[in-house]
Image (cartoon, rainbow, N blue to C red; front, top):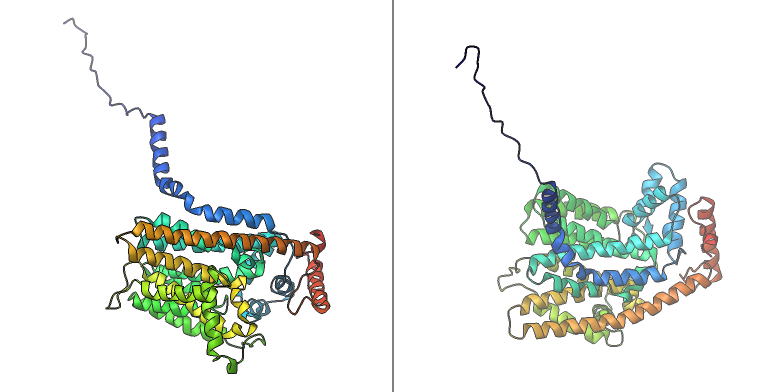
Length: 448
């Protein structure tokens, strides 16, 4: 080798692998699709929800109806002009026989966000609560019936989103209260059914709000405590029981009984109340044959309760027992205090939601009881057809009444029907609306 020459040293550097960005993006997309694919595939279970909201959207108008004047416009006018402690007092004050804390929170928050009240939006929010109820019910159905939960959920959806409950569907105050207390109970039950102290805290929070949201909130809290005791949740049952005792007592602090509520001497008119009770249970299917339907449903519910001889409930079914307890307890209470209004009151639209949920619970119990038995699919298909026929009949009834409600609001000024839509009541509604209009809360002339 010649002098001065040198060896060249070569080093090989490891190069980072070239990433195929298009492939990575494809894998990422597949991951996202895979995550949400089950929800997309089972979206058809929300068909009843879509039908329901399409009909509601067709008939809602931005005009107050009955209790909307007092419970929304009158309340917000007072709340806006109140200060400090008085505002809190107004939130917990009575409306008729009930405290409607949850509803009033919604009205206040909506008003302070948007600066005025739109009854169409309030009605929409009220009905969204029913969707929350449905979603939580689906959660419990999946736990109890993991294989065919979607089919059961679809049938349950047709039971829940039934237009015979047209007052709740298209009457802002009514829907916000009646769907609201059920939703709060379902949310509390959902959190209490999950492990962990955080979920116990959330369950307790919603239980407390539930108690102050309607008259049957105390019944809901009592059933939640019973659920936790049966579920062997020591900490949860202590928390729930304490909330029941404390908030239940506060609910009746300075409580004033409405004259519309039956007196103590009328409470034990057993024949009348019993007829009313069974009529309410059977109201999902018929008014004319409501008592017969109610008796049959009640017998089936007792026969199909998924419990063995040792009083151990089948796995995943305890939440449905708790829900059933609330439904039956509420119907008993309504029967005691409303049967004096006549048997027609058992078919008041605002109450039928309880019969709708009972019909869905009955279908769930029937599925669990017959699962794996001979002729299972024939029997369940027959039950589903019966429920769908009821849905179709109730749809026509509800659609007709929703159309009448819309026409009534558009052509009857200041519709306030407490004692026959008298001139006195019309003047009262006018005064409430005028005060709200002056405060910039809502003006009816903008909608007529």
